[in-house]
Length: 263
Image (tube, rainbow, N blue to C red; front, side, top):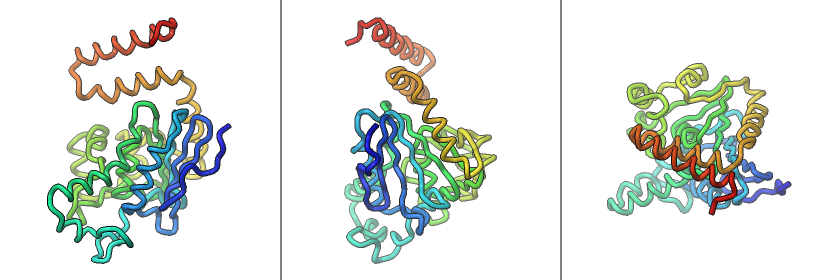
């Protein structure tokens, strides 16, 4: 069994690894796990620090809220210590501003790597950047008290941390537009009905439900899961015939591997 000592513990993010399961925990419940550029860098580092043995990554937040979104200090002229404020970012040229936002986005992109399955355990508020972080994961198990909301437009901004693509893919364009433009709360029943949540459980059962799902995900051979995930991730960008060809190629690799004829 791998040691449960933290592989990483900084800026409100902790990474622990136990055998094939890594757990990334947001560790600032006093601020409802509000997010900052430092936290985003720590999340990016967590993804880079995963051992090759990890198959499932669980994302969770300490306390009553998964993440209440962006720390509003980013909007103040002072910003965070050692970090550019949003007003300062706005004064940068197009290339530098684009690079800064791209660096922030990197905290949200690695969760769908083909070699892992990521599961967000979401309770309480998941607002703005918190909603987008939950959307970054492959699967979401949510507590019945969950409240998703995309509040960026009410602040004069847009969701820019990778959340728009999975949101449209899950709920469709019209509902995604309505959720983002109004900033309203999406409660657990709607989340389950629209596919935002794979499973809804009472708050006290969230950790157990995630453990059960993790066990089920680990039951299949790793390479079969990797190939299946890659097929599903690419399906929306392929025609029907292209998808069938991708299935044939993936199955050929699996058959040869099972027969001991792989590379």
